[in-house]
Image (tube, rainbow, N blue to C red):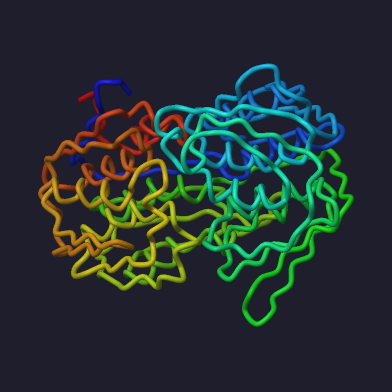
Length: 439
């Protein structure tokens, strides 16, 4: 991939079996929890994308010894806590990384300054800083907590915190801070979000109590938890697997299998939605890996129909709406996606960028404040557009998938950003038979 751009074009059927990159969420957490733990943590299958590598460097800055032992294999020697860093912590484009790291750092008597790239510096951090401040953290920075900012931790008070929005990042930041808060913490989730932090805390030896009360989840972390190093096998990322799988569904004659995909029910909303649209999507060889269910998923070219996606499904697929919108562009009828306002505060305003990219390729889209509606004809759209990504990796990959099955190819700018979450994307798709070239 070049900085100048990348273009995909229509070609023959896509065929083959590939392995999904390691899950990004679990990769971030394995680095952070390994650094917080006492002793050795070994990780296999780590996603070696730019975002996770930025988190690894941050953990080194906080005192952990980290060594890469091979492709996807890492060793973390944790010191049982964080020490004060001597330099600014640069988290690159990693929104998950910086929010979770701030939560973890808040538990220690230290000052740390955080920054990131231009995209990350534009993303508000108030949703994490607000609950941390209630626990006793102080910070100094720009409006709405935008980076760069300096955080001062230590002497935290426990609390019960009801999430004002469905956000696994906020929940995780509070839980990580709660590891070193007097009295522990409770997080109340009106709408369930991905539960990797809870699962992984248990894997590192913590007691995490999860109860459902009248349809609301209560996650409690008692005071005085100690983490011990462990082994983490990172499952395949369902968000990344979505790209070759949707390509298999929309390119005629295709059959694509992605192995080792995480099947956590709080992450599989896209697969459920695609099956409701009529996708020939088959899950097989289901098994367990490091406390998570994984399986192999096969996608075959399918005639898709538009559906109304239940808004309550959004937390289980919030990162997959851009690629779902691509599938919707090939479906017959309307696909209605609402209750996804969270997309506007991701790496970019993903609602607007997805809509604009599709419109540039001849697809009918209606944009709403909290969602959008894509209307397909059941036939390949025109394509032919050049899509502005604003440095958003998921916008870039989604529209490149569109170009593989549209009447004309599709180009995207800034393809280098794809490496933040899916290094090797272009080579993997070419290996399946896709036409990808410099624009």
